[in-house]
Length: 115
Length: 113
Image (cartoon, rainbow over all chains, first blue to last red; front, side, top):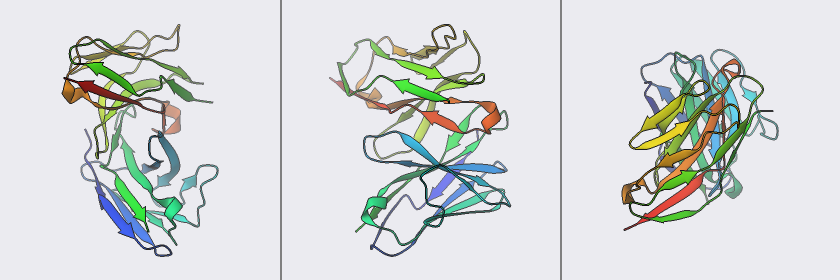
């Protein structure tokens, strides 16, 4: 299966600063990547679909100006949390699809804590 | 719309007990069904999957059968181990959504010696 690397694994930042999370598909050219967010003891909720070479598609209720997504190449998508606040503290995880389009491969996730 | 309803936890079992975690789904198309496992502090790992009705996915002693008539994909294991302690997510994917996944709320399993 595809190998997905997400960086950093965890980050602590001050309120008001911005944080960039990288998601790399190491052995698979991904035209589409997905970003999810998981709050404590809750399920993963899709935030946005990252499309290579075009704008991301955001789910309802997700602020596109706050969660900036860039998918500049077939192997890299980035999620930038701008002007982070404590309520943005969460576990962020990305995924890419398989060639057979029946399985997703997930990064290790990034635990963001905003203080 | 597409969705997954999963048995809520937490579930606590003694080692070697039988495990069932219920999962039902709603889908407009023909979904593939998955169980993912998340160990503490880690990301999601695929446990097993089934891509069409009556398929049985199995891995590490876990099994789940794709039941179209009951729209279910219940996870079972005959004898759990302490190392099975984790959070289990049922999920579906419909191919025409380009690999977007819909997850259940997750069930936390703790196996005690």
